[in-house]
Image 1 (cartoon, one colour):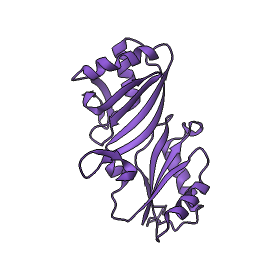
Image 2 (spheres, one colour; image 1 turned 180 degrees about the vertical axis):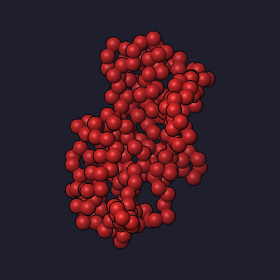
Image 3 (cartoon, rainbow, N blue to C red; image 1 turned 180 degrees about the horizontal axis):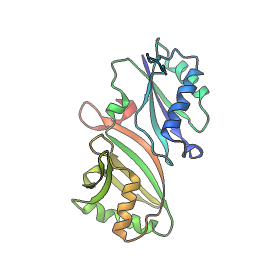
Amino acid sequence: MRALIRFGKQPRLRFISHLDLQRFFQRAVNRTGLPIAWSQGFNPHPVMSFGSALALGWTSEYEVLDIKLSAPMGRKRTEDAIRAALPEDLPVLEVRMVDDRHPAPMALVRMSEYSVRLTGAGGAKVIEQIPAFLARKEVLAMKKTKSGEKQMDIRPMVVALEPVEDGFRARLMLTEQSTLKPDLLVRVLAEQAGVEPPEAAIHRTLLLGLNENGEPAPLMAL
């Protein structure tokens, strides 16, 4: 049996790295009293994985942790134990129990949604560029890859983009082959506007996969 835990990351912890977060959760689950499954080998650790790493400095309301249990447990008991082991800045928002045949969340992720708030002199001009960006068929940008920086067309990676009063909301691709981070999108829009990139407060609001009909759906619902 496995427990899928959706949790948030509040502003006070936004500069905690993903690696440090992994280490913290490994210690935290040991305090829950739950029957956590452990890996084999010279360095045993709790069997757990995250849906997607969150970049340093970002906040979130949709992080997913997958924890393997060595014995069946009820959802309420698991939720209460996990919540008691975590600080308020890592709130537990949803818990779902699945069997071991359920795909790992990281294998299901296809897209992510963000709320981006822009501050500074160039923020308004960046927001003004969104209609022009959406009208383009191709948008070339230098993008970091495993083999170094490459010029790539990022336009297909923007599934949806909507301006709001102080920034924008975006649904972006998040796969091994095609990923776009919102901070790069901000830089591209700033270049298009001819201004320096403004400060951006990035908040992840949703992780999505594809349901049996091939339509986007929240990760916890798959």
